Image (tube, rainbow, N blue to C red):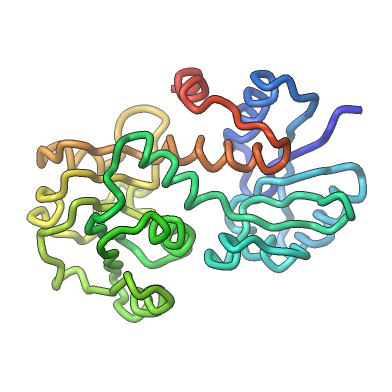
Length: 266
């Protein structure tokens, strides 16, 4: 019987997950179907129960349902606990539901592929929302020299930093131009806006990454970094593939080829 998986959220119309996971399945000879399900407001548990009771084996979770998925899971991985959110659910052999978060590891997977020198680096993360929280543990696990979180609301950065001795908080005005790596974890690029980081800080970095991506062209943040002659600047499309690939591996026990996937979708 064909195994069933899906992406679960609202909206899901434009999600690439069905195409990605169908491609993964074809490449690894897995018998599965992958569909979309729009979650109605306030009905996450009801709809998730229905999916898993009717043969569903796993779900990818999009905003705004990652907290609902976190609360729904019977068991959480350390990455999910650190992120306070779940982007992958898996039905275990005993019927319990495992919640994981592959976002941060998907980012690290792509950063390493792009030869970002994470170990010993001075890293700036722009933003202190859910996206920043989701990537923090995998970044810290790579043994950087330091991680600084800069946010418009300083108190949110302080709150996010307090669980890690390597991590500190800063206002935008107090940033100094001495970061090797800068990661934009805000959604500013979705609105074609730049985060409030001084050009002097940005142009002194060697590596810049935007968690957001555009289907065609560059995000405004990456384009701005390139205009400032930052040597290595990339958007988050590789992170999208990385987190999906790790979800698929969790479900199926096989890892699809990253480069083959990237070549097919870009």
